[in-house]
Image (tube, rainbow, N blue to C red; front, top):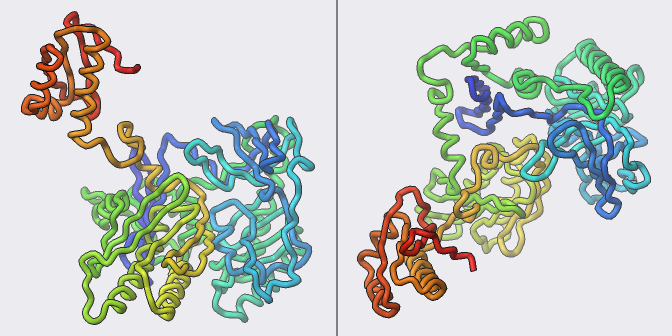
Length: 525
């Protein structure tokens, strides 16, 4: 698989697109007027503790108080936890600032393993207490940032967890021999530096010296954080994570990337300067894009972003997905659409569902969908077909860096899953709720608007007893009224005369009624 990173920078925002075999799979956006706090460490002050909800609100110097759940209080494991979390090491620690291990599956293999200790938040925190916290989730909608007391410092090859003692090695490294080698190194480094260590996938083949140097750097970084925390008064930031491009290089740019394309000469020069000392072997992969056509247009990214704003996603076969984000969950509906297949109906349904799986995973990554996700596959009567789709889903989801939990396909053909939400989805970042429909995606039918208007005219006359009334509405509504027999009938029945006036700036559903003195008649009764 050929992987490319495309970075576009202008006076408004900086955007990073990740392409796999020429297809857009991820987009990261940082606006220049926007403060991103994911991964930052703060000295905060507890403002409120809610034992009944097991959460505390902490002031860290942002617009909204951050919230800390009891599950995000510092915890550790008393023994080596490589097998417990190594499958998801990258998913947990990669550019996320969290040390929470994923829930262990309920199986015989997990019996007797160390379990997470639960504590009552009221026993640990009290109002006014100062604590050191790290942001693990950006503020979303009306919710403040989510924080943890389990600080983690991600490097390129290693994640250093200063207040922990567990060791983890990513099982995305295919070689058991290599994992064991890295685990041995991790144990040696753990004994020397005192702190939890997570060896990331990109550490494959790296020497002990390289890992030692990075852990040493991260240890110094932690000591600086502690020193800063002693000096400042809460609330205050004590550690700011790498800038946008720095995080991209740290978390995405490696041997598996064929090229990193940057359209900003300033960013290009800064990147080359950084790589010259840190990763000189990667310099040859960095390309400066200099063309009158924008780099996102040249690579077809702008077109894909516009598609990502639509609910309907077409499949190559002619089938399609309908993706809808709601307050409670994200729903994905799979349909055969134009695809009629070549043989029997069962195979047509199976092939559509299998094709949909790849696109669903891609769309989840691209749109950064999080929380509860329910996927309605086309009903499959055969159990083996359902198993094929589920196995395909499990395989494709491995491409996703976010932590996920997938349940088996239900008897109703539904797949229920959760996906870690670290930041607002692409839709919430790039769109606002319609001020007219308030996010419903629908407006009143024309005839419904006409009926409501005529009823309002009748009510206005009954309240004021005015015989001359003026109606101002959208020009589309006024044109309908001028040709509507109900208007003449209303005038006759009430013995009134209506003056119709259009206003192109009015929303379709809005209208105003005035008396003969040009005084607006209130309709809020």
